[in-house]
Image (cartoon, rainbow, N blue to C red; front, side):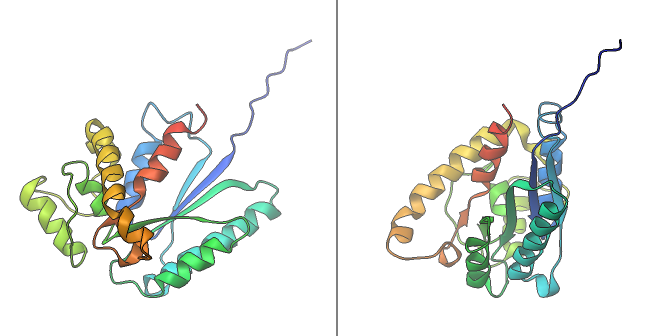
Length: 205
């Protein structure tokens, strides 16, 4: 009698983004040799809602959650990744995610995802008016040929721990403002990409 081997299906996790830079970074992390097998249950998708509205991204996540439940393959966790870069209805997007069942994890950056890239090089709390300003800063000081959606985790892997440390330092810098009632989207500089990356780092270990 032949012996049968059954491979356990991985638990599903979803990251839903509205920007190409984020998708490139997360996908390159997932397919890294150290993570490929461990993160085979991780899905990374891009969705561009009308006017790049964050609330549209959250609603799309809710739709995907519903479809996954219908297929009897629910997500263990769902993450939406967006930023403040000129977007409207950000408070509503946070509320929509918080009241979802199950709640949707919001990963947010001020002014854009590139602040996370900056933290690989610099421990600094600095205001940028828009995404173009932070890209210009990165090109001027650290990566002279930097362009959005062209730099993945594989290019920055040796600085990953530095980025985590600098992001945690930035959380400390923002702590007083948050405790005094400021919202994340009202801060001059913020990112919690580190929280998602630490979650992924520990997943299935």
